[in-house]
Image 1 (cartoon, helix red, strand yellow):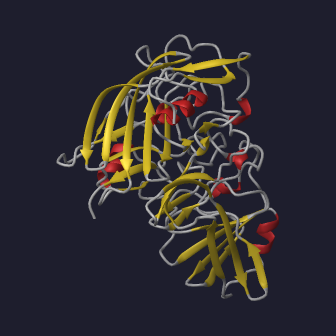
Image 2 (cartoon, helix red, strand yellow):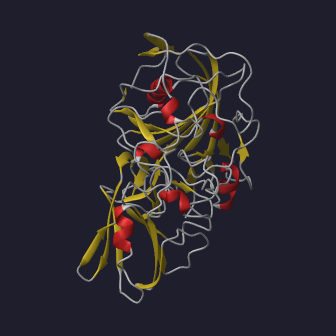
Length: 428
């Protein structure tokens, strides 16, 4: 950790300073911060040079509960002044835990404050990037997150292929499977969660390469459970491993398995609620042909798990930007913009939620590289970048208060509905 008052100097490509008015509400900005950023259009930037991030000057400190401290701060980056919020969580404090904020279904969205109040959270921030928009006629945006989720120790969804992600470019050596989470040992950590699964029917075994995700890998099969919701599963067979705007597959199959028995086989990918005890298998390309071999009445087993989960009770997707107390090389230089990040320190015993506002005269925001340096300054050793731009939201309440309030200034002018978030909880 840097000594107090130290100035952080990072070497990165610095784009020209933002000018003019902020983007219209609900629209992606030119800074590549949020889910609306298109990976194939991310390029450019000025020649490399030093980026200076001033150490935060804390303007208020409030103890929300034992082990949970909320701070506001001022700093500055390449774009000018910055206002931010920091939540410090001591995971050793009795009754304190960090968990997943989630809407009722994977394929749905809610504001951070609505999710926090529904789950009785003390505080929360927005989480992963998500399927915010679609360009294909008849294919609805699902609202589902790009990366993995673990809730109460159980896999809720897996990661889409990297080429199907929304959000800024991944730094070298990182993956859309990266997450931040907390284990049964009450220690936070950054990990990588890869889905491992099979579809088994007698002597037939088909690899399972998807779980409740809006995009399946090329020629792959995936499973959808009751957690998915009612939105069409059609998006799962669109795009490719390298470009999310590639056409939808025409060779598709969908198999409905109820209580371990195939009850329906179709060439059409459907929609609608999936009952408890039922799994819908969707295949594209080569996997579609193999799924069609599963005739009605045949017994089928579907099994899956995350590799290297190592006892995680909660996890949410976000790409690594800080490792071993050092910002990663190759961080996206675009921005500055509103940002959200999460980190862990003190051997995983402390968890940090960090938000900076942007796209305004009072607070210009930070680049991803600057955010990594600021996250380290707060006490984090490892950390991830979360969805930013109009999604960036921090909401909190005191223990005695009945509902959270939004503490930052979302750049859309109001809260955006998002795919998930990170919540802080107290009590049993």
